[in-house]
Structures are given as structure tokens and as C-alpha cells.
Image (cartoon, rainbow, N blue to C red; front, side, top):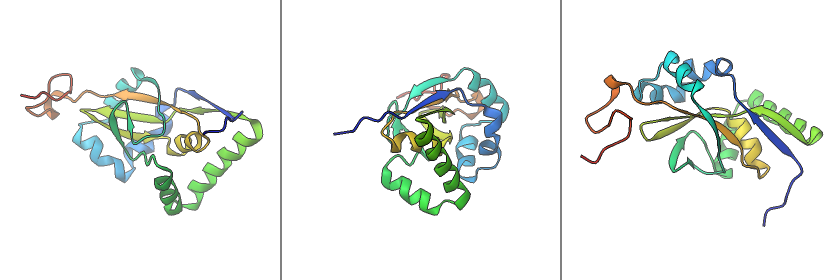
Length: 164
């Protein structure tokens, strides 16, 4: 049985420009961008077409596995143990603000969808804060259709796989 909490987090549309490091420098995400032919300009355009979606604690969102979401509590504790001190301090600061104020308004984490795959682009600490308090966070969901030259013979123009 889950206990109810009076703590709340409200989610707002994130600022993609504030998350540019995740695109240009995060080493674990570069392969996803390259495989799907995602460049910064394409991401900017697709981002504006995105929208909020609830993301209950799970390794997948709407039936699609989300890379780098580390959704289980065990994954979270392992990830946090390896994280740098500054990373943990920022999480602790958010947690203390939530407990002190009772509510927070945060930019929604960003999840990218492309060709049947998904990637947690940014917002892991925010996602975990909500999950760890038994809340269902909302994420900014961005769908990027594969560019024509990055598609293989088994993909349709919409970026979904065909059986034939």
C-alpha cells in the first residue's frame, strides 16, 4: 500500500537551450543522436511540437524502452553512488526545497522518441525526485521522425518499421 503525500511537483515546459550540454557533450547520448540523424536544428524544430506526457516509474514510456532512465530504485542508488558530489548536492537541494515548501515547479524532463526507441535526454534528477516520493512525473515528449537519408529499407516515411 502506498502512503499519500501532501508534497507536489508541478511540471512546466523546459527550456531546450538550457539543456544544450546534454546534446553537444554528454558522451552516453551521442550514439543515439548519430543513429537517428539528429542534429541541433532538427531537435529545436521537433521540440516545439512536443508535449507533456505522464511517466510512471518504469523502464519504458508508452511501451517504448527509454535508454538512460534507470527506472528501478536499485538502478537509481547505483547511479547516484557513482555520481559526482555536485550531482548529489543538486538533488539534495531540490529535495530539501520540496520538503520545506511542500511544492515545487520544475522544468519537465525531456524524452526523445525516434524510430521505435526513446532516450531520456535530460532531467534524471527531477524524474527521480518525483519517483522517489511516489509521484508520477510529466515529461516533455519529443518525437523525431528519421530523416530520409537515415532510413533503412524497413522503415516507412513516418519512421515506423514495416514487416515487409
